[in-house]
Image (tube, rainbow, N blue to C red; front, side, top):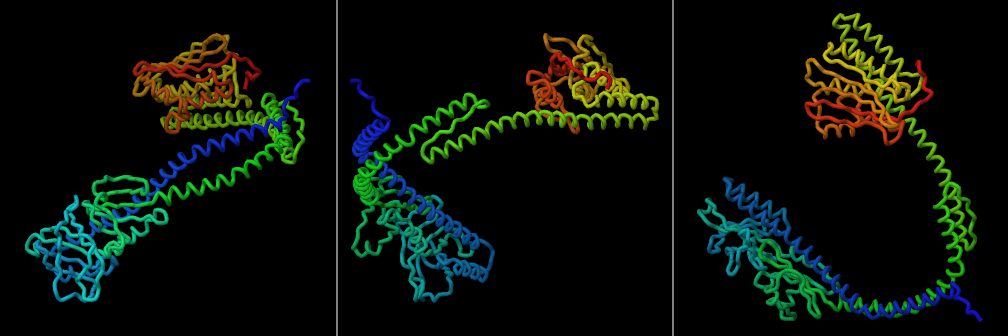
Length: 570
Protein backbone atom coordinates (compact mmCIF):
# COMPACT_ATOMS: atom_id res chain seq x y z
CA UNK A 1 0.00 0.00 0.00
CA UNK A 2 1.40 3.34 -1.06
CA UNK A 3 2.24 5.63 1.82
CA UNK A 4 0.31 8.89 1.79
CA UNK A 5 2.43 12.07 1.90
CA UNK A 6 2.15 14.34 4.92
CA UNK A 7 -0.46 17.03 4.77
CA UNK A 8 0.57 20.67 4.87
CA UNK A 9 -0.80 21.12 8.38
CA UNK A 10 1.03 18.03 9.72
CA UNK A 11 4.25 19.07 8.03
CA UNK A 12 3.98 22.58 9.46
CA UNK A 13 3.34 21.24 12.99
CA UNK A 14 6.35 18.94 12.77
CA UNK A 15 8.58 21.64 11.39
CA UNK A 16 7.49 24.19 13.97
CA UNK A 17 7.97 21.68 16.79
CA UNK A 18 11.45 20.71 15.63
CA UNK A 19 12.56 24.29 15.01
CA UNK A 20 11.16 25.43 18.34
CA UNK A 21 12.88 22.63 20.27
CA UNK A 22 16.23 23.24 18.58
CA UNK A 23 15.88 26.99 19.06
CA UNK A 24 15.17 26.63 22.77
CA UNK A 25 18.13 24.29 23.23
CA UNK A 26 20.58 26.51 21.35
CA UNK A 27 19.24 29.64 23.02
CA UNK A 28 19.75 28.11 26.45
CA UNK A 29 23.33 27.13 25.61
CA UNK A 30 24.46 30.42 24.11
CA UNK A 31 22.32 32.76 26.17
CA UNK A 32 24.50 32.79 29.26
CA UNK A 33 27.53 33.89 27.23
CA UNK A 34 26.15 36.12 24.49
CA UNK A 35 23.54 37.86 26.56
CA UNK A 36 25.89 38.26 29.51
CA UNK A 37 28.54 39.77 27.25
CA UNK A 38 25.98 42.08 25.73
CA UNK A 39 24.83 43.18 29.17
CA UNK A 40 28.42 43.73 30.24
CA UNK A 41 29.14 45.79 27.12
CA UNK A 42 25.97 47.81 27.60
CA UNK A 43 26.79 48.36 31.26
CA UNK A 44 30.30 49.55 30.37
CA UNK A 45 28.96 51.82 27.62
CA UNK A 46 26.27 53.22 29.91
CA UNK A 47 28.80 53.86 32.67
CA UNK A 48 31.22 55.47 30.24
CA UNK A 49 28.49 57.69 28.84
CA UNK A 50 27.39 58.79 32.31
CA UNK A 51 30.96 59.61 33.34
CA UNK A 52 31.51 61.48 30.06
CA UNK A 53 28.42 63.58 30.74
CA UNK A 54 29.62 64.35 34.25
CA UNK A 55 33.12 65.14 32.98
CA UNK A 56 31.68 67.43 30.34
CA UNK A 57 29.58 69.28 32.90
CA UNK A 58 32.49 69.66 35.36
CA UNK A 59 34.83 70.66 32.51
CA UNK A 60 32.39 73.33 31.35
CA UNK A 61 32.06 74.57 34.91
CA UNK A 62 35.82 74.76 35.52
CA UNK A 63 36.35 76.34 32.10
CA UNK A 64 33.82 78.99 32.99
CA UNK A 65 35.60 79.50 36.32
CA UNK A 66 38.95 79.84 34.48
CA UNK A 67 37.45 82.51 32.26
CA UNK A 68 36.05 84.32 35.29
CA UNK A 69 39.37 84.44 37.19
CA UNK A 70 41.13 85.72 34.08
CA UNK A 71 38.51 88.44 33.83
CA UNK A 72 39.08 89.31 37.48
CA UNK A 73 42.84 89.49 36.86
CA UNK A 74 42.21 91.77 33.89
CA UNK A 75 40.13 94.11 36.04
CA UNK A 76 42.94 94.25 38.61
CA UNK A 77 45.48 95.03 35.89
CA UNK A 78 43.35 97.91 34.60
CA UNK A 79 43.61 101.50 35.83
CA UNK A 80 40.28 101.37 37.63
CA UNK A 81 40.27 102.87 41.14
CA UNK A 82 39.67 100.85 44.29
CA UNK A 83 36.04 101.98 44.64
CA UNK A 84 35.21 100.86 41.07
CA UNK A 85 36.94 97.51 41.65
CA UNK A 86 35.05 97.01 44.91
CA UNK A 87 31.71 97.66 43.19
CA UNK A 88 32.59 95.40 40.24
CA UNK A 89 33.78 92.44 42.34
CA UNK A 90 30.97 92.74 44.88
CA UNK A 91 28.48 92.63 42.01
CA UNK A 92 30.18 89.49 40.65
CA UNK A 93 29.92 87.75 44.03
CA UNK A 94 26.28 88.73 44.43
CA UNK A 95 25.29 87.61 40.92
CA UNK A 96 26.85 84.13 41.20
CA UNK A 97 25.44 81.91 43.91
CA UNK A 98 28.51 79.67 43.83
CA UNK A 99 31.07 82.50 44.18
CA UNK A 100 31.66 83.35 47.86
CA UNK A 101 34.70 85.64 47.68
CA UNK A 102 37.44 87.17 45.53
CA UNK A 103 40.86 87.76 47.02
CA UNK A 104 44.43 88.85 46.38
CA UNK A 105 47.25 87.13 48.32
CA UNK A 106 50.98 87.56 48.50
CA UNK A 107 53.29 84.83 47.26
CA UNK A 108 53.57 83.64 50.86
CA UNK A 109 49.75 83.36 51.18
CA UNK A 110 48.99 86.56 53.17
CA UNK A 111 45.67 88.20 52.32
CA UNK A 112 46.02 91.67 50.72
CA UNK A 113 42.47 92.39 49.50
CA UNK A 114 39.14 90.59 49.70
CA UNK A 115 35.74 91.23 48.16
CA UNK A 116 32.59 89.45 49.41
CA UNK A 117 28.83 89.62 49.10
CA UNK A 118 28.48 91.74 52.25
CA UNK A 119 28.65 89.06 54.92
CA UNK A 120 30.46 89.90 58.16
CA UNK A 121 34.11 88.90 57.92
CA UNK A 122 36.22 87.63 60.78
CA UNK A 123 38.62 90.19 62.18
CA UNK A 124 41.66 87.99 61.49
CA UNK A 125 42.85 87.84 57.89
CA UNK A 126 42.62 84.62 55.94
CA UNK A 127 45.47 82.90 54.13
CA UNK A 128 46.08 80.97 50.91
CA UNK A 129 47.81 77.62 51.34
CA UNK A 130 49.01 76.08 48.05
CA UNK A 131 51.32 73.55 49.66
CA UNK A 132 51.40 70.37 47.55
CA UNK A 133 49.13 71.89 44.87
CA UNK A 134 50.50 71.79 41.32
CA UNK A 135 49.24 74.12 38.59
CA UNK A 136 47.30 72.69 35.68
CA UNK A 137 48.47 73.19 32.05
CA UNK A 138 46.83 76.63 31.95
CA UNK A 139 48.71 77.78 35.07
CA UNK A 140 45.75 77.71 37.49
CA UNK A 141 45.91 76.20 40.97
CA UNK A 142 42.94 74.17 42.21
CA UNK A 143 42.97 73.50 45.98
CA UNK A 144 41.27 70.47 47.56
CA UNK A 145 37.82 71.15 49.03
CA UNK A 146 38.00 72.90 52.38
CA UNK A 147 35.90 74.95 54.77
CA UNK A 148 36.15 78.68 54.13
CA UNK A 149 36.92 80.63 57.33
CA UNK A 150 36.53 84.22 56.13
CA UNK A 151 33.09 84.81 57.62
CA UNK A 152 32.00 84.96 61.24
CA UNK A 153 28.76 83.04 60.81
CA UNK A 154 29.12 81.28 57.44
CA UNK A 155 31.32 78.25 56.75
CA UNK A 156 30.78 77.06 53.19
CA UNK A 157 32.57 74.06 51.66
CA UNK A 158 34.62 75.59 48.83
CA UNK A 159 37.33 75.02 46.24
CA UNK A 160 39.85 77.83 45.78
CA UNK A 161 41.09 78.63 42.28
CA UNK A 162 44.23 80.78 42.24
CA UNK A 163 46.23 82.39 39.46
CA UNK A 164 49.65 84.09 39.72
CA UNK A 165 49.77 87.61 38.29
CA UNK A 166 52.01 90.67 38.26
CA UNK A 167 49.92 93.59 39.58
CA UNK A 168 51.45 97.05 39.83
CA UNK A 169 48.85 98.18 42.35
CA UNK A 170 50.22 95.53 44.76
CA UNK A 171 53.87 96.05 43.89
CA UNK A 172 54.66 92.86 41.98
CA UNK A 173 53.85 89.14 41.95
CA UNK A 174 50.68 88.12 43.80
CA UNK A 175 47.99 85.40 43.63
CA UNK A 176 44.47 86.29 42.46
CA UNK A 177 41.96 83.81 43.87
CA UNK A 178 38.27 83.09 44.09
CA UNK A 179 36.38 80.69 46.33
CA UNK A 180 33.67 78.56 44.67
CA UNK A 181 31.15 76.64 46.71
CA UNK A 182 31.74 72.93 46.17
CA UNK A 183 28.00 72.35 46.33
CA UNK A 184 27.75 73.39 42.66
CA UNK A 185 30.26 70.72 41.65
CA UNK A 186 28.62 68.23 44.00
CA UNK A 187 25.28 68.84 42.31
CA UNK A 188 26.75 67.79 38.94
CA UNK A 189 28.27 64.65 40.44
CA UNK A 190 25.25 63.63 42.50
CA UNK A 191 23.06 63.86 39.39
CA UNK A 192 25.07 61.11 37.68
CA UNK A 193 23.32 57.81 38.17
CA UNK A 194 24.84 54.50 37.09
CA UNK A 195 22.21 51.97 38.04
CA UNK A 196 20.52 52.18 41.42
CA UNK A 197 23.68 51.96 43.54
CA UNK A 198 26.41 53.24 41.22
CA UNK A 199 28.08 56.58 41.91
CA UNK A 200 30.81 58.95 40.70
CA UNK A 201 33.55 60.83 42.54
CA UNK A 202 36.56 63.05 41.81
CA UNK A 203 40.23 62.42 42.56
CA UNK A 204 43.36 64.40 41.76
CA UNK A 205 46.30 63.18 39.71
CA UNK A 206 47.88 61.61 42.83
CA UNK A 207 44.76 59.62 43.68
CA UNK A 208 43.69 61.84 46.57
CA UNK A 209 39.98 62.26 47.06
CA UNK A 210 38.63 65.62 45.87
CA UNK A 211 34.91 64.91 46.12
CA UNK A 212 32.86 61.87 47.02
CA UNK A 213 29.07 61.74 47.41
CA UNK A 214 29.61 59.84 50.67
CA UNK A 215 32.69 61.74 51.80
CA UNK A 216 31.23 62.44 55.24
CA UNK A 217 31.04 58.68 55.85
CA UNK A 218 34.57 58.32 54.47
CA UNK A 219 35.96 61.09 56.71
CA UNK A 220 34.19 59.58 59.71
CA UNK A 221 35.65 56.12 58.94
CA UNK A 222 32.29 54.45 58.26
CA UNK A 223 33.12 53.85 54.60
CA UNK A 224 36.36 53.37 52.68
CA UNK A 225 37.26 54.16 49.10
CA UNK A 226 40.62 52.83 47.93
CA UNK A 227 41.66 55.56 45.50
CA UNK A 228 45.44 55.00 45.50
CA UNK A 229 45.41 52.25 42.80
CA UNK A 230 43.25 54.46 40.57
CA UNK A 231 46.08 56.97 40.13
CA UNK A 232 48.03 54.39 38.11
CA UNK A 233 45.10 53.59 35.79
CA UNK A 234 44.61 55.39 32.50
CA UNK A 235 41.40 56.84 31.18
CA UNK A 236 38.81 54.34 30.00
CA UNK A 237 36.82 51.34 31.28
CA UNK A 238 38.35 49.02 33.89
CA UNK A 239 36.27 45.99 34.89
CA UNK A 240 36.83 43.12 37.31
CA UNK A 241 34.57 40.39 38.69
CA UNK A 242 32.33 42.72 40.67
CA UNK A 243 32.85 46.32 39.57
CA UNK A 244 33.10 48.46 36.47
CA UNK A 245 35.20 51.58 36.93
CA UNK A 246 35.28 54.31 34.30
CA UNK A 247 37.97 57.01 34.56
CA UNK A 248 38.10 60.26 32.60
CA UNK A 249 40.59 63.09 33.15
CA UNK A 250 39.62 66.76 33.04
CA UNK A 251 41.81 69.29 31.24
CA UNK A 252 41.55 71.73 34.17
CA UNK A 253 42.85 71.27 37.70
CA UNK A 254 44.34 67.82 37.16
CA UNK A 255 41.07 66.27 38.35
CA UNK A 256 39.81 62.85 37.25
CA UNK A 257 36.19 61.65 37.22
CA UNK A 258 35.71 58.07 38.44
CA UNK A 259 32.42 56.23 37.87
CA UNK A 260 31.68 53.04 39.81
CA UNK A 261 28.93 50.57 38.86
CA UNK A 262 28.14 47.07 40.10
CA UNK A 263 28.08 44.11 37.75
CA UNK A 264 25.64 42.27 39.98
CA UNK A 265 23.12 45.06 39.55
CA UNK A 266 23.70 45.82 35.86
CA UNK A 267 24.43 42.32 34.51
CA UNK A 268 23.65 39.41 36.75
CA UNK A 269 20.24 40.48 38.00
CA UNK A 270 18.87 41.32 34.49
CA UNK A 271 20.39 38.09 33.21
CA UNK A 272 18.68 35.98 35.86
CA UNK A 273 15.37 37.79 35.42
CA UNK A 274 15.45 37.29 31.65
CA UNK A 275 16.33 33.61 32.05
CA UNK A 276 13.41 33.05 34.41
CA UNK A 277 11.06 34.82 32.03
CA UNK A 278 12.37 32.71 29.14
CA UNK A 279 11.81 29.45 31.00
CA UNK A 280 8.29 30.54 31.87
CA UNK A 281 7.23 31.84 28.49
CA UNK A 282 8.85 29.30 26.13
CA UNK A 283 6.47 26.40 26.89
CA UNK A 284 3.44 28.63 26.63
CA UNK A 285 4.69 30.22 23.43
CA UNK A 286 5.52 26.80 21.98
CA UNK A 287 2.02 25.52 22.63
CA UNK A 288 0.41 28.60 21.14
CA UNK A 289 2.78 28.48 18.17
CA UNK A 290 1.83 24.92 17.36
CA UNK A 291 -1.88 25.72 17.43
CA UNK A 292 -1.46 28.83 15.32
CA UNK A 293 0.69 26.94 12.81
CA UNK A 294 -1.96 24.29 12.38
CA UNK A 295 -4.71 26.87 11.97
CA UNK A 296 -2.74 28.92 9.49
CA UNK A 297 -1.91 25.84 7.45
CA UNK A 298 -5.55 24.92 7.08
CA UNK A 299 -7.18 28.33 6.66
CA UNK A 300 -4.54 30.57 5.15
CA UNK A 301 -1.76 28.75 3.36
CA UNK A 302 -3.70 27.38 0.42
CA UNK A 303 -5.66 30.56 -0.39
CA UNK A 304 -2.49 32.59 -0.04
CA UNK A 305 -0.61 30.34 -2.41
CA UNK A 306 -3.40 30.70 -4.93
CA UNK A 307 -3.42 34.47 -4.47
CA UNK A 308 0.36 34.55 -5.01
CA UNK A 309 -0.13 32.61 -8.24
CA UNK A 310 -2.69 35.18 -9.43
CA UNK A 311 -0.25 37.98 -8.61
CA UNK A 312 2.50 36.32 -10.64
CA UNK A 313 0.13 35.96 -13.57
CA UNK A 314 -0.70 39.65 -13.29
CA UNK A 315 3.00 40.59 -13.31
CA UNK A 316 3.55 38.74 -16.59
CA UNK A 317 0.45 40.00 -18.43
CA UNK A 318 -0.97 43.06 -16.66
CA UNK A 319 -2.89 44.70 -19.55
CA UNK A 320 -4.85 41.56 -20.51
CA UNK A 321 -5.07 39.96 -17.06
CA UNK A 322 -8.50 38.77 -15.84
CA UNK A 323 -8.64 38.08 -12.11
CA UNK A 324 -10.58 35.21 -10.54
CA UNK A 325 -11.42 35.98 -6.86
CA UNK A 326 -9.94 33.70 -4.16
CA UNK A 327 -12.15 32.44 -1.33
CA UNK A 328 -11.12 31.65 2.24
CA UNK A 329 -11.15 33.40 5.59
CA UNK A 330 -12.41 36.94 5.95
CA UNK A 331 -8.90 38.33 5.74
CA UNK A 332 -8.18 36.32 2.58
CA UNK A 333 -11.40 37.62 1.06
CA UNK A 334 -10.42 41.19 1.93
CA UNK A 335 -7.00 40.66 0.32
CA UNK A 336 -8.63 39.13 -2.72
CA UNK A 337 -11.08 42.03 -3.10
CA UNK A 338 -8.27 44.54 -2.60
CA UNK A 339 -6.11 42.84 -5.20
CA UNK A 340 -9.02 42.74 -7.63
CA UNK A 341 -9.60 46.46 -7.08
CA UNK A 342 -5.86 47.12 -7.47
CA UNK A 343 -5.76 45.18 -10.74
CA UNK A 344 -8.58 47.25 -12.17
CA UNK A 345 -7.06 50.48 -10.91
CA UNK A 346 -3.59 49.71 -12.29
CA UNK A 347 -4.99 48.76 -15.69
CA UNK A 348 -6.94 52.00 -15.75
CA UNK A 349 -3.88 54.01 -14.67
CA UNK A 350 -1.79 52.39 -17.42
CA UNK A 351 -4.29 53.63 -19.99
CA UNK A 352 -4.37 57.08 -18.37
CA UNK A 353 -0.58 57.31 -18.29
CA UNK A 354 -0.35 56.45 -21.97
CA UNK A 355 -2.87 59.17 -22.76
CA UNK A 356 -1.20 61.71 -20.48
CA UNK A 357 2.24 60.98 -21.94
CA UNK A 358 0.94 61.71 -25.40
CA UNK A 359 -0.69 64.93 -24.20
CA UNK A 360 2.47 65.92 -22.34
CA UNK A 361 4.55 65.32 -25.46
CA UNK A 362 2.38 67.74 -27.40
CA UNK A 363 2.36 70.29 -24.55
CA UNK A 364 6.16 70.24 -24.25
CA UNK A 365 6.42 70.78 -27.97
CA UNK A 366 4.14 73.82 -27.85
CA UNK A 367 6.02 75.24 -24.87
CA UNK A 368 9.40 74.91 -26.62
CA UNK A 369 8.00 76.48 -29.80
CA UNK A 370 6.53 79.36 -27.77
CA UNK A 371 10.01 80.09 -26.38
CA UNK A 372 11.53 80.70 -29.80
CA UNK A 373 8.89 82.87 -31.51
CA UNK A 374 8.97 85.87 -29.06
CA UNK A 375 12.76 85.76 -29.01
CA UNK A 376 13.10 85.83 -32.79
CA UNK A 377 10.52 88.62 -33.13
CA UNK A 378 12.33 90.76 -30.56
CA UNK A 379 15.71 90.53 -32.34
CA UNK A 380 14.24 91.14 -35.80
CA UNK A 381 12.25 94.20 -34.71
CA UNK A 382 15.36 95.50 -32.96
CA UNK A 383 17.24 95.28 -36.28
CA UNK A 384 14.41 97.04 -38.15
CA UNK A 385 14.37 99.82 -35.57
CA UNK A 386 18.11 100.22 -35.98
CA UNK A 387 17.75 100.56 -39.79
CA UNK A 388 14.96 103.11 -39.44
CA UNK A 389 16.98 105.20 -36.99
CA UNK A 390 19.78 105.38 -39.59
CA UNK A 391 17.34 106.47 -42.29
CA UNK A 392 17.78 103.35 -44.38
CA UNK A 393 14.12 103.02 -45.19
CA UNK A 394 14.59 100.90 -48.30
CA UNK A 395 16.66 98.40 -46.34
CA UNK A 396 14.07 98.51 -43.57
CA UNK A 397 11.34 97.70 -46.13
CA UNK A 398 13.35 94.70 -47.30
CA UNK A 399 13.77 93.61 -43.69
CA UNK A 400 10.03 93.94 -43.02
CA UNK A 401 9.34 91.91 -46.16
CA UNK A 402 11.77 89.25 -44.98
CA UNK A 403 10.13 89.32 -41.55
CA UNK A 404 6.70 88.79 -43.14
CA UNK A 405 8.02 85.77 -45.04
CA UNK A 406 9.57 84.47 -41.83
CA UNK A 407 6.33 84.61 -39.94
CA UNK A 408 4.35 83.16 -42.81
CA UNK A 409 6.66 80.17 -42.70
CA UNK A 410 6.64 80.10 -38.86
CA UNK A 411 2.87 79.82 -38.66
CA UNK A 412 2.79 76.99 -41.24
CA UNK A 413 -1.02 76.74 -40.87
CA UNK A 414 -0.52 75.29 -37.40
CA UNK A 415 1.81 72.56 -38.59
CA UNK A 416 4.76 71.81 -36.30
CA UNK A 417 6.71 69.98 -39.00
CA UNK A 418 7.49 71.71 -42.28
CA UNK A 419 9.42 70.68 -45.43
CA UNK A 420 13.14 71.32 -45.33
CA UNK A 421 12.77 73.71 -48.28
CA UNK A 422 10.60 75.99 -46.10
CA UNK A 423 13.05 75.77 -43.21
CA UNK A 424 15.89 76.75 -45.55
CA UNK A 425 13.82 79.65 -46.85
CA UNK A 426 13.18 80.71 -43.27
CA UNK A 427 16.92 80.54 -42.49
CA UNK A 428 17.79 82.57 -45.59
CA UNK A 429 15.34 85.29 -44.61
CA UNK A 430 16.96 85.46 -41.20
CA UNK A 431 20.46 85.72 -42.74
CA UNK A 432 19.26 88.49 -45.07
CA UNK A 433 18.04 90.49 -42.08
CA UNK A 434 21.25 89.91 -40.12
CA UNK A 435 23.42 90.92 -43.09
CA UNK A 436 21.64 94.26 -43.11
CA UNK A 437 22.23 94.63 -39.39
CA UNK A 438 25.91 93.70 -39.50
CA UNK A 439 26.63 95.70 -42.69
CA UNK A 440 27.61 92.69 -44.83
CA UNK A 441 30.40 91.74 -42.45
CA UNK A 442 29.75 88.07 -43.14
CA UNK A 443 28.66 85.94 -46.10
CA UNK A 444 26.69 82.73 -46.35
CA UNK A 445 25.99 79.92 -48.76
CA UNK A 446 23.74 76.86 -48.96
CA UNK A 447 24.83 73.36 -50.03
CA UNK A 448 21.65 71.31 -50.35
CA UNK A 449 20.76 67.92 -51.81
CA UNK A 450 17.50 68.78 -53.58
CA UNK A 451 16.17 65.25 -53.18
CA UNK A 452 15.76 65.98 -49.48
CA UNK A 453 13.82 69.23 -49.78
CA UNK A 454 10.42 67.57 -49.27
CA UNK A 455 11.48 65.74 -46.10
CA UNK A 456 10.11 67.13 -42.87
CA UNK A 457 11.88 68.89 -40.02
CA UNK A 458 10.75 70.89 -37.02
CA UNK A 459 10.28 74.52 -37.91
CA UNK A 460 12.70 77.21 -36.66
CA UNK A 461 15.51 74.71 -36.28
CA UNK A 462 18.27 76.59 -38.09
CA UNK A 463 17.58 80.14 -36.91
CA UNK A 464 18.82 79.76 -33.27
CA UNK A 465 21.99 78.04 -34.51
CA UNK A 466 22.63 80.78 -37.06
CA UNK A 467 22.07 83.37 -34.36
CA UNK A 468 24.69 81.76 -32.13
CA UNK A 469 27.14 81.62 -35.05
CA UNK A 470 26.70 85.34 -35.76
CA UNK A 471 26.62 86.64 -32.20
CA UNK A 472 29.17 84.34 -30.57
CA UNK A 473 31.06 82.56 -33.33
CA UNK A 474 32.38 85.62 -35.14
CA UNK A 475 33.19 87.46 -31.91
CA UNK A 476 35.32 90.49 -32.78
CA UNK A 477 35.50 89.67 -36.53
CA UNK A 478 35.33 92.82 -38.65
CA UNK A 479 34.90 91.07 -41.98
CA UNK A 480 35.30 87.78 -43.83
CA UNK A 481 32.87 85.84 -41.62
CA UNK A 482 31.38 82.91 -43.53
CA UNK A 483 28.47 80.58 -42.73
CA UNK A 484 27.73 77.42 -44.68
CA UNK A 485 24.40 75.58 -44.37
CA UNK A 486 24.49 72.02 -45.68
CA UNK A 487 21.76 69.38 -46.09
CA UNK A 488 23.02 65.91 -47.02
CA UNK A 489 21.81 62.30 -46.65
CA UNK A 490 23.49 59.95 -44.19
CA UNK A 491 22.12 56.45 -44.72
CA UNK A 492 18.45 56.61 -43.76
CA UNK A 493 19.03 59.90 -41.92
CA UNK A 494 19.58 63.51 -42.88
CA UNK A 495 22.50 65.62 -41.66
CA UNK A 496 21.85 69.36 -41.58
CA UNK A 497 25.04 71.23 -40.67
CA UNK A 498 25.79 74.87 -39.92
CA UNK A 499 29.51 75.66 -40.21
CA UNK A 500 31.20 78.99 -39.41
CA UNK A 501 34.84 80.12 -39.52
CA UNK A 502 34.53 81.98 -36.22
CA UNK A 503 36.47 81.96 -32.98
CA UNK A 504 35.52 78.41 -32.04
CA UNK A 505 35.40 77.06 -28.50
CA UNK A 506 36.63 74.37 -26.12
CA UNK A 507 34.89 70.99 -25.81
CA UNK A 508 33.76 71.93 -22.29
CA UNK A 509 31.91 74.92 -23.77
CA UNK A 510 30.27 72.66 -26.35
CA UNK A 511 28.99 70.38 -23.59
CA UNK A 512 27.77 73.38 -21.59
CA UNK A 513 25.79 74.73 -24.56
CA UNK A 514 24.03 71.38 -25.02
CA UNK A 515 23.18 71.18 -21.32
CA UNK A 516 21.72 74.67 -20.81
CA UNK A 517 18.38 75.97 -21.99
CA UNK A 518 19.82 79.40 -22.76
CA UNK A 519 22.86 80.42 -24.74
CA UNK A 520 23.20 83.82 -23.14
CA UNK A 521 21.23 86.67 -21.58
CA UNK A 522 17.83 86.58 -23.22
CA UNK A 523 18.87 84.00 -25.84
CA UNK A 524 17.22 80.74 -26.75
CA UNK A 525 19.72 77.91 -26.27
CA UNK A 526 20.70 75.32 -28.83
CA UNK A 527 19.55 72.71 -26.31
CA UNK A 528 16.00 73.98 -26.97
CA UNK A 529 16.31 73.00 -30.64
CA UNK A 530 17.73 69.59 -29.72
CA UNK A 531 14.89 69.01 -27.24
CA UNK A 532 12.27 69.75 -29.89
CA UNK A 533 13.87 67.36 -32.37
CA UNK A 534 13.93 64.60 -29.75
CA UNK A 535 10.27 65.22 -28.93
CA UNK A 536 9.33 64.92 -32.60
CA UNK A 537 11.58 62.10 -33.75
CA UNK A 538 12.94 60.31 -30.63
CA UNK A 539 16.18 59.96 -28.68
CA UNK A 540 18.56 58.95 -31.55
CA UNK A 541 18.10 62.37 -33.15
CA UNK A 542 19.16 65.85 -32.10
CA UNK A 543 22.23 68.10 -32.12
CA UNK A 544 25.97 67.69 -31.70
CA UNK A 545 28.74 70.31 -31.80
CA UNK A 546 32.28 70.07 -33.19
CA UNK A 547 34.59 73.00 -32.47
CA UNK A 548 38.18 74.01 -31.71
CA UNK A 549 39.47 77.44 -30.63
CA UNK A 550 40.31 79.65 -33.64
CA UNK A 551 39.15 76.88 -36.01
CA UNK A 552 35.44 77.64 -36.22
CA UNK A 553 32.38 75.64 -35.16
CA UNK A 554 30.21 73.00 -36.81
CA UNK A 555 26.71 72.21 -35.51
CA UNK A 556 25.31 68.90 -36.78
CA UNK A 557 21.56 68.25 -36.79
CA UNK A 558 20.52 64.62 -37.34
CA UNK A 559 16.98 64.01 -38.64
CA UNK A 560 15.18 61.00 -40.10
CA UNK A 561 14.29 60.98 -43.79
CA UNK A 562 10.57 61.33 -43.24
CA UNK A 563 7.94 62.51 -45.67
CA UNK A 564 4.53 63.75 -44.68
CA UNK A 565 1.45 65.70 -45.54
CA UNK A 566 2.69 69.04 -44.29
CA UNK A 567 1.35 71.96 -46.30
CA UNK A 568 3.70 73.12 -48.98
CA UNK A 569 2.35 76.68 -49.23
CA UNK A 570 1.70 77.95 -45.74
